[in-house]
Image (cartoon, each protein chain N blue to C red):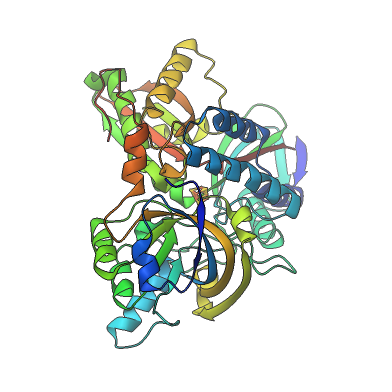
Length: 195
Length: 280
Ligand code: SF4
């Protein structure tokens, strides 16, 4: 994993997305779109019915987050990532529309990793549970779709130096696999090595 | 008979919900700081620094530690010489959750039905485990349980022949599967024995101990320590990005069980290990 954080601007252009490698730490600047379970369901249903996404898809970065309500005078409350795997079923359809980055935490399915390769996109992890810290990197927030979903509405977020790390890149690199391999020790108890 | 007003229960509960979500307990801060010193992976150390910093920001700026402010889970020890007046105990607790989550600007994460999935809007109903005990006190333990780590928890009905080895392997396997999804470093609650529902409850109760406080029974304490060592050989590391510290503590509770059974439950708790106790 590279030590230096790279400043990356959103929306992601195709070259930048293809250059990012698993293990690269980044600081994101620009706009990302917050959406989680219920919003994904609606977005993909809209696409199936010939509709469009509630934001310009080209190069868009989606952040899997359902923040706490904003305290007075602040754009947003705690805003750390939620588990990405629940969005696996919807992600390829969004990538096909031009979405080029997703931020969350936890494993992605083989189908999503394949779609990353196919569309030249990346999956990044933010620190799960660092909701207060990450909230400081969000300078503006606005509901742009599905306000009835409450904490699951789609938000347009402006981020400044939002820290994340590339987990799955467009070349098939996988930091979760590589990191574990690097630090795993043999199970000396004779019990089966849990994997 | 000692009288306790339902309103007082609600007020206390409202405070507890906020307290737990804004202040990470000292046990957890110390465990994270120790992990920071021991972690070999530079990225892992970075993550642990972020988590310690996160706790300070949450406290200073009154922002919840994590956006998943959890299902409101209560363990209630009700003294049998207590009389709750002015309303029912469960409703008083739910009213407290309602107030606490709304006043505290906490996220409402409960849906009213498992597949219709409409948000109840106030984080109720709470999940309440009530026990009648001797005395005239009311003791409430609150934990805000996040979905990410709860989803990686598991229960298995082992065969008695699987023995302690089978129990240990199941725990390590569950931690390995949880990986990055459960926001490691995690605390692992293990319940062994009882029956199907009792072992799950034991696993959750085990998590209520101050982190790293070993079981009072030296044999169980040794099993906890061995499991901790084994889990930390997996290499999962902070946030699953590779490292030495996957688990901060394994906490186990046991209970008698049927001659044919060996139930085991593993309740995974993320580093946002939020619990507070109040006594009325
Ligand atoms: S698993 Fe825990 S730390 Fe991670 S997002 Fe959920 S509640 Fe927060």
